Length: 286
Length: 286
View 1 (cartoon, each protein chain N blue to C red):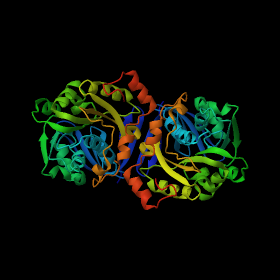
View 2: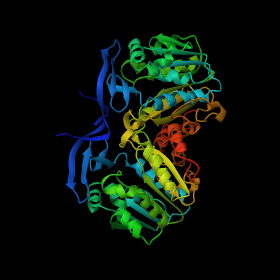
View 3: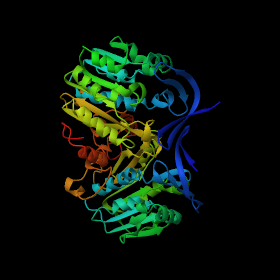
């Protein structure tokens, strides 16, 4: 028996996975959820028809959305993760020895349960005693939040469905408020190939609430076009400057290095030009 | 009417293109050739079932395989292109004002004809008076060659079928011989995601004939996993060092910048570790 799962990554372009078995398929209160065993990428979490994370290539995404802000902060102790119910971001956050507490705010308890049961290597980090799980809408949580954080990572689905609110200016304003002075946040913002305009707009919006707003990118083989954009907002530190070498010692990664950190801010010329036309953000650059 | 073209990019993984029309489909003396109008990437050249180049994303590949060696050489005048019958590499080579002559050696005249007729924006460069077209097997040409070059670019299909000889050590030895002192060559070497072992082996083999052998990579959305590996051999210059700023002035690119040149040599940690285990090449690094 062999299935295929097909995702339309852009109009007229599909990535198709050979599937050995469908381990779970359900409609939750928020979205359609599936975990499948693929032939090429191992176990794979799919939400509303879009591949979210696979065992084989998840490290590219999770390392780059996490270590860029974490290593840019001089001493991250309290971290907020919005979304990321698969546990991948939390696993990377906990590699930093300064971390005392991580609040993970996931809207859909079924995502937590599915990955805990079926993708345990990813979800294992969620059992760490420093992790506080909150099942709530991230927008509501941050709007009402009276805590403060050094770093926030927004690991959401695309800007349709349950994650739509995470792309609105009000959410960036709330994030700016809950971060300590010198704090940073990152979120994923679509494909630099198919939707560079989304990246440019996100840089502009984040720049209204943070003195530093930058775009960076990294390879994510199972996302459309194979590489992906991120936006980082900072209340202080320059997020494009990699940490000192001794800071990375003892932290095991598969993609991230000081060199790939710096390289992630080297944008294609066409994207640089779009950012320049959009007007210099307060950071003065892409 | 709507067709689909499906390429198996790795075992159990397919990229599927919506196709408006099949403009040409033929069996040449060497391979099966098609030019199709895709919905997402414009006109697309397909050889033996593998997408070679598309109008929309070809600049990533052609700029990175060409400008890294061209800008690493202090004054490239004579250039050899092996394969590359679509004209994309030649177009990038001719952007460098020092270039006096380009020999393009393409094994399959039908590739030249098909792209001249159907992808003229790519093939236009082939009509430049500095370009000398040779329809011949690249391995034979280089083995018998009594010319010398500053830069050679090997823009071939994958290491099966007509391009198999371009991946053998004897070919690298011939290339090393036809390059002037201080000369450089690049070739494409597979996916850093699916075939990192091929990159590691290529670095080792090139290192037997060149004092500097390095791996670099760049995004190519229509190739497996969306990013691609290259190997560069150099008789002298450090290919990872970008040119001075005034050298790039007036040369129009869409992906390449001094920063993306440098960033292309920032390899994932897993690949660095594989290269280190393979033993330091004469360059002393990846």
